[in-house]
Amino acid sequence: MSHNPLKSHFFAHLSRMKLITRWPLMRNVRSENVQEHSLQVAMVAHSLALIRNKYFAGTLDPYKVATIALFHDVSEVLTGDLPTPVKYSNPVIRDEYKKIEKLAEQKLINMAPADFKDDYAALIDHHYHSEDEAFIVKAADVICAYLKTLEELSAGNKEFGLAKKRLDKILKDYRSDEVNYFMKAYVPSFSLSLDEITQEDM
Image 1 (cartoon, rainbow, N blue to C red):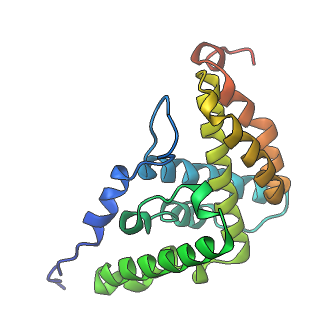
Image 2 (image 1 turned 60 degrees about the horizontal axis):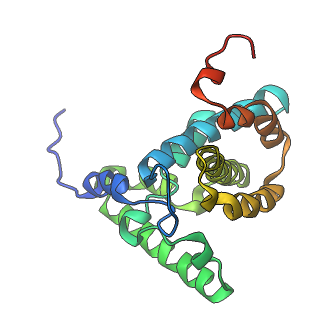
């Protein structure tokens, strides 16, 4: 059975994630875009789900969690990345931005190819995600922001000192067995040099 392809701008919009720069108000040793951040969040979320399942009797689908994480910031192709200090400076701005994000998500879902709209809605619209899935993805998002501060500080960029302290506090809200395991086992490596992480004796 043949299907005539229907045109859609959905994927062209998603491809522009690489043009959205994160941490726009801060001097970066290396700039980071939303596309690469989303890949890292997906990798970390996948590992958190594996850790929960393997060691803490979890029942998450790591592949679903990773895919949700890949799409967690797609609304920013329409809204841009509002810096965190601005986004959370007061409740009014925070709540209004949440509304804007929701509208942008719905606009993207409406752009998706008609036959796959429900499939992409299940990834983009937070209402489709279980509490555990949402927690894992958000925890991974925070961890990746924290890792960015470690990398910048390791490169001598003191600009990220306060951001690290802020994220230290935020991470306390996401402490769980799998997050604690990841932070203890894997995060210390991010402050090491290439020579140090390639040594066989760790």
